[in-house]
Length: 81
Image 1 (cartoon, one colour):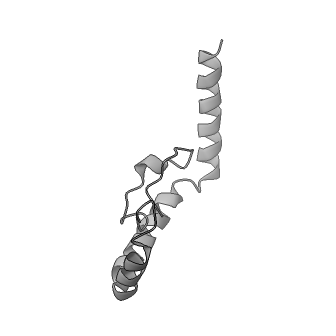
Image 2 (cartoon, rainbow, N blue to C red):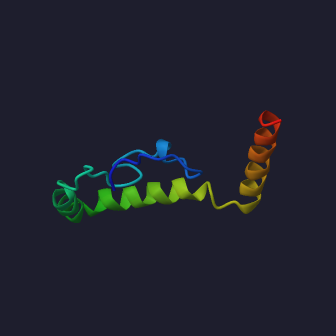
């Protein structure tokens, strides 16, 4: 995917290209080149997949996500008085 341009709860701004995902140019002009590279370098592709799974793992704790949501709401209501 191209470098993310939006920030959501998924914290896209902390993702690292070619570490968490295969980064391609915005116009997709290097897509075929990148695909061919990682087809030939399977171990590097698997490492990116492993890194991506580790990154996503931080969002899979339901209790932690509930707590974070409540803290965000608390801060919002504090500043919106």
